[in-house]
Image 1 (tube, rainbow, N blue to C red):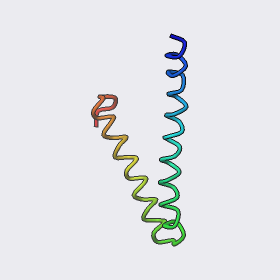
Image 2: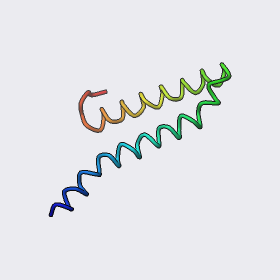
Image 3: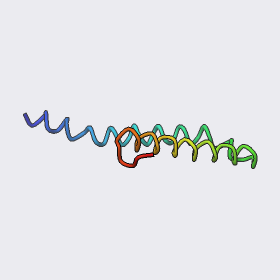
Length: 67
């Protein structure tokens, strides 16, 4: 039973490591696009629009704020 709880306690560390790895990979792939002003503005707009789209969609789905 001790081994079971030891393995369960490793899952949060694994989750954090995988999440940080994904964000680092995405950042490294998008970093060259921020070197030119035009693509930086476009990419920033896409990221902000994506965030608002997800936020509004979740609010509507969960009924937190009627739109």
